[in-house]
Length: 244
Image (cartoon, rainbow, N blue to C red; front, side, top):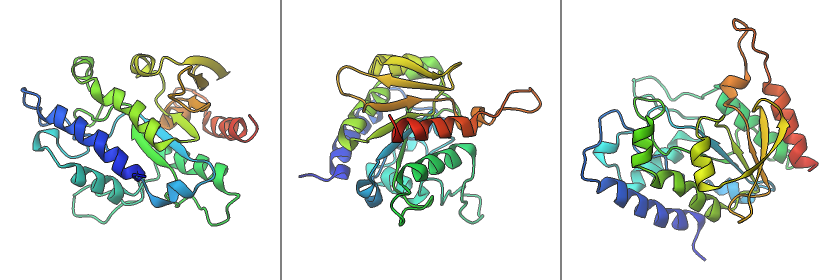
């Protein structure tokens, strides 16, 4: 059997060939695509989790056409936010943003029965619904619409990786693409978009698929008097998986 990474490489190379062959030149501000490389710990986990974020905050440059090997090596070296290289001459950074703290906490909650698993274990995977960013933020809708292949790529990734749990940390920003690719039915767990369970009829997502807001939004804002829902969502997600 081909390894998970070999299977990913086949679909990724096809994807790269397509976007690199586009006749228009890519703007300097468009990042190269985020392409996963499976850590060996992922396959050992009792509960395999794939976190789906929104888009990167800069990730090489599309117009320089980095190779598949270069992009997968970058993913490995980034180390799920534990070795971030900002290329400013400073040492590698261990990211403690709401996104990474949320992902590590939920992963550990669901796999800590294995005493060898810690928050630092590379036992989960991370990708984004948009494979690239523009100017380190969300690409405008025209750029998204002109490049639909990256959004559909997520469906192939899930098919190969077979996660037990998928968590979309996207809020509703990319719902049009989620609907286009997966067309899920939605069951509200916590109202106002704080936690929703997805179900699909074609098996393209696991039974335990959820959507919540970006963890930065879950933290809330004292200035705007927006409540912190971060712990509530993590606790509810943990219970929804452990006691479905």
